[in-house]
Image (cartoon, rainbow, N blue to C red):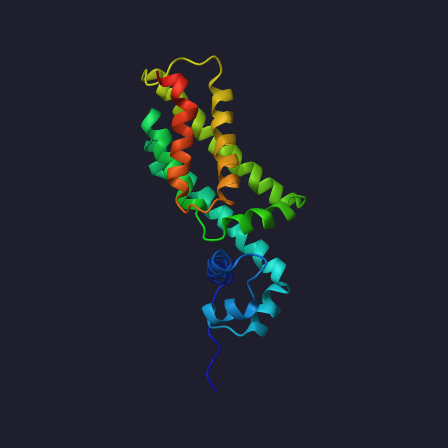
Amino acid sequence: MARPKKVSDSEILLIAFEVISNEGFESFTFEQVSRATGLSPAALVKRFKTKKRLAFLARNQKWDENMAKMNTTKISELNGLNGIFEFLRLIAKSVDSKRLGEHLRWLGTEAEDPKAKKKVASYFAETRGIFRRLVEEAIANREIKKVSDPEDLAMTLEALVQGSIFQFGFLNERNIERHLVSRFRSALQPFTS
């Protein structure tokens, strides 16, 4: 008899998130994750109990990965107005999904979970802080006009990202990066002319 394949919970959650991204949070099954991981559906149920719990843990791990990407050297090297647009490209890569609308709907159902709220709030605060730094550098570099409150502009930009991602989830277009860049050019136009 063959020995069972050893796969860490982290590896399973990474694979599960990919399955969920393709199939949707409401549509994926333990059987699909089983085929992708090489583990039996029973082994997955034993480890994760429910489909909802597996999806929740996979999503939380993805949030953690996205947060880790925010702290990389590449982010700290971004500067000014070009940095704002490069940061948008990084955000677009971290959220692009074939079933984004379904993800957003599913995330909405988890909005009351305190752990989920903390992760989302932490992610938003991190992105807002990066935008604030980039706005302040763009002002110092004279790439944009001085604004009375860089924190307020950073919050507006961060809210625009979140709103655009939510709206994008229900569009037929598949290029979220182009969508975000277009929205930001419009939003920053009064400060650059």
